[in-house]
Image (tube, rainbow, N blue to C red; front, side):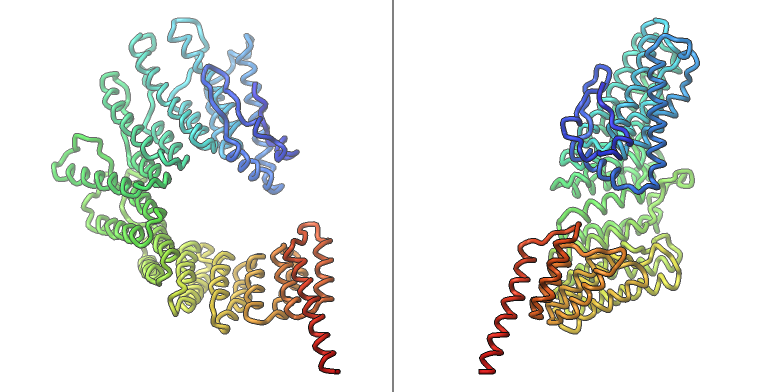
Length: 577
């Protein structure tokens, strides 16, 4: 039995766990590796960094663990309590572990699998004609198990385990249909559903593995063949839907494979072509028909936005957005049952526009020509116009910040700072007018603008960084990066005294404490001011700081301060002589 790590242990010292504790096998005959060390350490980081308010969740997990162990103990003993167990109890416990999986993937998968194994043993006994508890699994049980795999952070191994579980479901249905020892209703309840396949596809998409796209397409083909086989077995069909195809596309998009965006585009184009054909013929095409929707287009746009293909990728993303709008407005591939499908519709969303803006911003980061920033600006302007006209494409903090960043990176554009500042002002005005928190400038927004100002060779423009630092306090609290960046800019333009005065404000700040960069910047300022005594005292304060210690840059700055002071003294004596 593996040593299971609970949240109580996490709070007492999760950081001491070594990689040797991270690999084990599940009970049963299936060998499974638990969460890899990197993913597990991230889980540890998330848990140990939580505030006291999140202890409620930890208590709930401990209660869930205690109840699960109690139920499993009853299952292993031949006692009268077993007769009182209900399937609803297993469903409730497994659902609870799916919610724990993103936080503590190892124990969630382990406990879910132990609960499922008990139900499966009962099923095996029934299929073999032996006496067994009436509690057996169904597709819902398996879906919750697969959810635990997909959300556990276990990467490729968890995705492969989910696929193995899916394949075993299919194999079991075939075998039980062949021996005919289960009634048809029970057999139907065991068959994988559309949701089952979708969960497995999403598990592969989350791996971000370079082969995830190819693996997802194989799973999709398995789904198509299984759908045909269901006719022969008289089982409910697992029919691909828009989420299915979106998951396949997402697996490609997240894989970052060189041909990922082209493959995603090809899948989308086939889906649209099949839909057109079905509408022209007045019936479904022979192949599986999936209605194209905004989710699929957004996935395709994302694939191009993160492709790293610069201007070409950004233009592709924008073309997809325009195609999406054309199809929506023309209703060329609209479905009759759109109102009954929560995923139906091709209306662009905030995500659609934001992804295209991101694509052009990424392009600007590579070229720094101004073209990417200009295109991002135009997309944002169209987004604002459509939003004011009542469309569901509200620009938010991330949208504005991305566009501001595009201008900030456009170093070769003479008006880049003015455009970035103008966007910031427009964003602030929208927030002050509407009071909408989703449009509120964030500390990231302010920092992007501050960085742009500090890179300017124009002394007047670099001074704007201080104005932004002051104005952003109306919307958010500047962080240490904000102050450090402005201090560095002040020194570069020859104002070391202002830089040191700003450092003193950091020292007196109750929520922000200086780091090594802050201290070293202040020491550099003092060195340039030739204030060796103050530099030496600051170094001593730094040495007493529990959170940061001097490095060679710190000592070098103090040495330079004393050297410059001695040089000044010698120069002064020569003049006197």
